[in-house]
Image 1 (cartoon, rainbow, N blue to C red):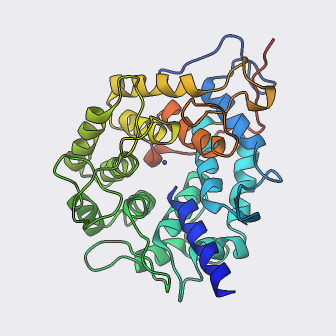
Image 2 (image 1 turned 90 degrees about the vertical axis):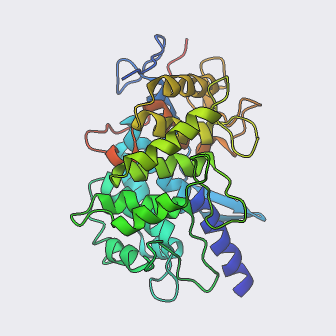
Length: 347
């Protein structure tokens, strides 16, 4: 039992870690809209991949586990694309079920995970809910209780502290939407982790500070929201400096991919680096499956263009649409989103 719970905990953490110039396709149409844009097609495809229309799952050693982190990524994607609002509501309702919620956040006493708490709080806010009352749980109070005197948001867990740049960034983004705002000490702590080259590492206090594309994209957005534009600008400059010639982004010398490019593109648009955003957006559009693809795959975004993989496509699509729309987490809202999962209408 202890081994299984530990594996489940580690899997949940991994899932949690893993966030104007609209391109249109003339041949695209859907019942819900007369002209369907590339992001909307991606949102529609993503909605159709939800298990029972409400969740994503991760399979480990042949066992399916709830993937709350990816499900929340889908909630953000639906808000960004303005489609599948009914699916977004059902997905958030699933994540906030007490058994599913507590398996993701911890019980709040012996176990409490900063990144998961912050990400769920932000998703509730994006959908217009009250994060101070999520099934009787005050996510904001719990999140603030996880802030250390130094300003870092840390896990309280027998499994160890898995908090990182994503945890800190999501915490700042969620708390910035509250009346009290983001704690200055927390923003200062994140700013203080910046590497000499201007980017931000995933994990702080490493022997060598290594900038990470995904972490920098989130940190830049969080620092802009927390009124530290100079620190955010340093991260944005670093992102522009590591953008590949094809417009894509990759981490650790890997292949440019939809996940890293989606997050980087979102940060670039949010930070008004429009030429770099346009290049990244074109890269993402090039990974999207169009009418030449299999009918079941149309609208999805492939991870790296090396052959469509249904196992990686949901996360790739969820993060790619953030870059395709360019709507930053600080401005993301599901207000006015349409129901339904639009699909490409191909001849």
